[in-house]
Structure formats: structure tokens, C-alpha cells
Amino acid sequence: MKDDFAAFVEHSGPRLLRFGVLLCGSVGDAEDLLHDSLVSSFPRWRKLRDQQPEAYVRRAMLNRLLSRQRSPWVRRRQTEVPDAASTRDEMSHADNRNMLLDALRELPPRMRAVIVLRYWLGYSEQETATTLDCSVGSVKSQSSRGLQRLRELVKDCVASGAEGQNK
Image (cartoon, rainbow, N blue to C red; front, side, top):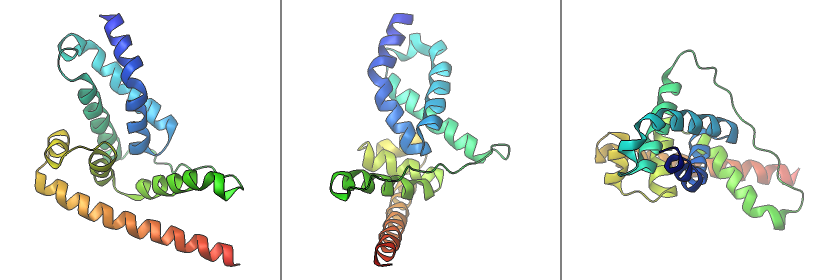
């Protein structure tokens, strides 16, 4: 049983960690979230291993994140993304990625989860609704509002970057 679980973590761990980074905005928080979710999943491994364990752990991660966000006892902190290197040509991809991650962090947790599931992981509306235990209509409205908010945030970021270059 331990060997099966270890093989699962080795195989799915990097994908689950990337998912966590997209949800949390920082590697450290994502590692904690993944670790806690894996620890809680291990006792159920005999039942999970023959089903969809990665989907189960992703759901556990979402539940933990949303639960933490609702808790009044959680000390919320904003994580800074390191500055990009000076050479724009080599780092433009990283700059765009950091800009998008910054914008994602600005979204409320539930909306961020919908955007990550739908557009980063490629879930259908129905799969997203099932994963988040909500209606398809809720997924559609959260997607629409989330994409609009991301457009605004990225536009503002690009505009402020252009102003900084002109000074």
C-alpha cells in the first residue's frame, strides 16, 4: 500500500503542486496545501487507488484552500513575485507568467479555482461544477466574471508598466 501511494505521489505530485501554486500564489503555501491533502488522503488510499486519486486530492486541496480562506483565524499574507531579469527578450515569457499569476492572486478563491480548473487544467463546465460542488450556471458566471476581471487587472498592469518605462 505504501509503495502504491509513493508511486502515485511521485507520478502526480508535480502536477498537483503546479495546481496548488496556481491556487495559492506561492510555492511554499502550495507545498503545505498539497502535503496536508496527501496526509489526509493516505488513510483512504485502498479505496482511492482504484478510482481517480488525483481528482480526489485536487478536490481535497480546493476544499482546504476554501476552508482556510473562510477562517477568521488565518493570517493572510500577500506573496511577492521576484522581479524579472533585466533582459526583456529572454524574460518576456516569465514576465507574462508573473503578471498572470499576480492577476490570479487578486481573484477571490472560488473564482480563482474556476479559472484554474477551466482554463489551466482544461476541465469542462460540468467537470468544474462537479469538482466544486456547484451548478454549471455558477461556473459560467464565475468564469465570465473572472476572465473579465483578469483582463482588467492585466490591462492595468500593462498600463502601469508602460507609464514606468516612459518616466
